Image (cartoon, rainbow over all chains, first blue to last red):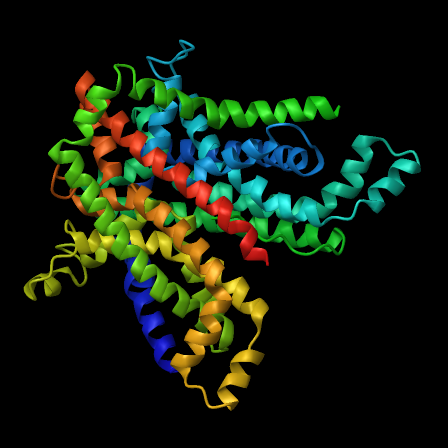
Length: 267
Length: 264
């Protein structure tokens, strides 16, 4: 019975995930390593990869800081309307990405209420990425902060440590693994984001075209080999960054205290 | 200090998320309710809604069956390659939905590895409903597996073994012991995967072809109409987006209801 279940499960995963992913890498190199290199180093490919990776890194850092702050306020502070903020945090997870795109363009587009037009700007791309990755760090840090005993912090404060010192020496080491875990999820999400970006980016070649949009264009103009090449390169970038963050997370966990591991992001 | 932090956090969340969402309401109902109702009763919208419900419905059924199956196998059994399997399930969450779509085309498309063979057998996957369902399942399956696994791990296997020693068969054990244990986690996972399935855009965009009234889901309807420009097309996009947003808000409320139960 278990053997049968395992067999069916593995077969299914192979058919819809493993084989297709292998096909991406194989196709990327189908016409040789030379073609692969040529495909990922065209001017357009280079600029879209540079934009996507750069913006993803920026967004990851911003939301790692903002997410930690929001989690802190939500756990340690009590104020009216707090429940509402809790619910709003989940909106980017639940909202379909294309709706998120429409949401952003209606606020920061040509008809926006503030007269700020971010359509076709890199700021717009970054904003869309900030929107969709907001919940990751918040949701990964929150449970750790909740489980954290406050006696050590109180001891530090009573011994004369300032708020900043207490945070840096006591709170931060404890929550660092959770921050990094959330950051890793956010980075991966930003790197592959498509739906929320395409409307506000207006897909300007060499300026606001992100990797996902570029790959879609390649497939639709019947060049799946080039699309697979870019996908493979992005896969490598994602793996490198995720491994790096994982290593950092382990180091932080070892240096931090004995608090339980974070539960991970909601997604 | 506390006041400052609180203000920054609240302002960031409101400015980044709440404000834009409210602006969509304003854009949708700029000319009153009438034009919005016209869109919601148009054949293209109804067709898109029906297709979205069909694809998401089928995907969630597959997610539930395979998600629970995978979670049980991963938690209760030890076998070589288990860690790899565990990692592969998560893979689609951390890569671009466009890449998911492309990967399916490379295997099941007309020039793909299996495409010609399947087409010869009369089964078209890409640019047809099966492809859209598969793409949706790939991106939403991890949500069910990840919700069910921790609950199963926590519950352990004592009850199951006790039932087995008393002569209960695998079906009875699953129905009487496993299912009641994971009930709430499963409900939570199913809601998450349903939300994701209805909202999936990138992967479906690649494998659908997006013909209005035929292979256009709600999210594609929003995109295609918005890209068309013109006030009518724009209103159509906003109206459909409003429907998707309302569904999303309902899901969030449902999730908020399910979450506390999960911990008990």
